[in-house]
Image 1 (spheres, rainbow, N blue to C red):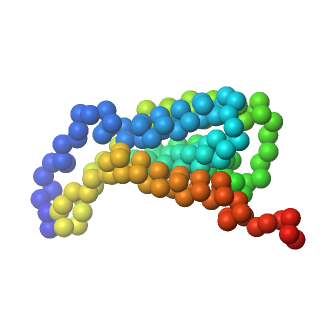
Image 2 (tube, rainbow, N blue to C red):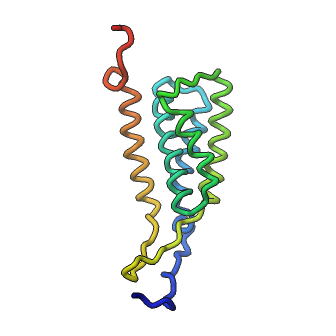
Image 3 (cartoon, rainbow, N blue to C red):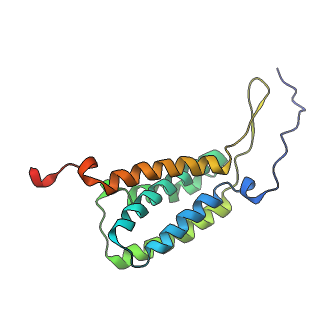
Length: 162
């Protein structure tokens, strides 16, 4: 067994350690705000992949920290910008959504705390991931999605040949 009186490992005083969602959500917000302007169509492929990754990151941080209400932001982000969703809006609606999501993810990054360390059965402590690990996973997901979205001849069926 383990000693019940042992204290929880000390928490970091660094803002990024206390709010690990902040840096990835800041990047997602900046990409969304740039997307609200006039950009080439290729940028919107990149925007889709960042928004899907951002939605999945919000969900991961919400579950890890126990703030399950933020899943209500992450799921719509992941589905709305998914290439298979076939959701089509006018340019003005997409611009409004880009700005609204930028504000929402900045709030999420600011308000979702780091996960608290948990005691393992062997008595050791399991700490939450560092912010850069979340950021790395999101970057890999983003690159995979961006490659799949921007290369439709490899990822989507060719409907012209049907």
